[in-house]
Structures are given as structure tokens and as C-alpha cells.
Length: 269
Image 1 (tube, helix red, strand yellow):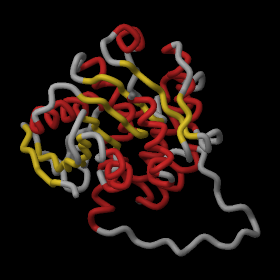
Image 2 (cartoon, one colour):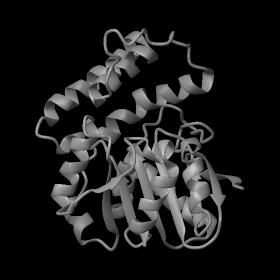
Image 3 (tube, helix red, strand yellow):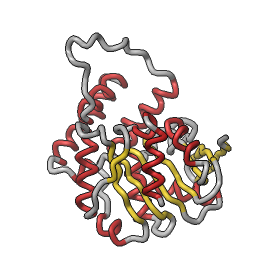
Image 4 (cartoon, one colour):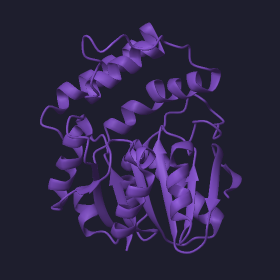
């Protein structure tokens, strides 16, 4: 059973959940909130203190200034604020997607606060050979949001990320449903204030290699067609390590939480 809390920060409020007891591990996403980590967190809580949260400006973590951009560095500072609130000096860390970029910023911005850091499929577009083209694609996705709205922007985003569209003859896609108020607010945060800063982050590879935290690159076994497969492998190559393969794809922790937890336990031990 998770304990729910809020933490007032200098520029907003963070919602977070704490489960279990033992060595601490933080599970973080961006823009994903705490919800999809629930099953994984419950499994890990049998032997660990597990901290999950809604990242700044998303879900139950409102900002005082809704127009403030979300950067990996600011999100990394939030992770340390959560550790302080829980009374934890040092924790392991799993980040997914944009949250994986957060973990890399945390490793270099707050050395000594994290033990093993697992960056699962970080969208580090600046590490790719076609970074200039990817930067332009990101700008076009953001422009699509402002011009044509949420559904058009998500469609463009999914195509660029490599997610397959339905094949001809497979039937029509389900009717588009208008997003609710919170979904619309979170989508606005993502496209208007988060996507650019996350994908343009350039990790300090030397600091990651020489710092006190052990950095592990995680990759889904079903993610070969995705853009994040390329970015994850580029990061692993830069760090001089092999990626650790996890069950499922980009959201493997949600699709197969038990299998994901088994691999994560081995990595953290």
C-alpha cells in the first residue's frame, strides 16, 4: 500500500508515493506520471523503499508558473528534494524515456546521491548522426501541436519515434476521443514546455563515466524499430558499456512488470 505525500518546492508542488522498506529506489518518468510504475513499484516494495512521483507540471505536481519549461536539470533537482523529504541520503534510480534523461542529469548534477542509475531508453537525439534532422523534426512536432492540436501532434510524434501505424487491411483505428482536462494539460506541458529541453539534452559522458554513480543503459527487447533503440545504443557506445536488455518495449515495465522487476533486481544487486 502506497503512502501518498506532497512536497512544496520553491517553484511548485511535487506529488509522490512511498512503498515498502529497505534500500531506496526512485522510479521516474517524463512526461509520464507515477501511475504506470504502480505494478513495478509494488513488486519492488517487498525488499526496497520505492519512491514514485508525478514530475513537475504533470498530473498532481502543479507549478506556480505553468509557463515554466521543464528541463532534465530541474527534474534532477526535484529527485534530490524527494530524497531529502523521505530522509534518504542515497538511492538507486530507474528512469524511463524522458525520465531516463532526468537520471543522467541527476548523476552529474548531484554526484554521490545515487548508486546505480538505470537509464531506460532515453531519447537523446543529439547523440545521433542525424541530430540536425531530428532537431528539425522535433520543432515541427511542436509546431504541429500549436497549429493543429493534441491528436495531430501525438500522431506526428509517434511516427517520428518509430511506432508502427496500422497496416492496410488490419481494420480502422478506433475513433479519436477528445482528451480530458488533465490529459490536455499534460499534453500541453509535454509539447510546449518539455519535449524540446528533453531531446536536446547532451549528457556529460566523461562525468558519467568517472562519477560515483554506476550508469546502466536499459533497452527493451521489442524496441528495435524505435528511435530510442538508436539513442540508447549511442549512449551505451559513448559510455563504453553494453545495454542491458529488459522485457517488452518502451513501456516494458508496464506490459511485463514481473519480468521487468526480475531484470532490474539483478542490475541493482
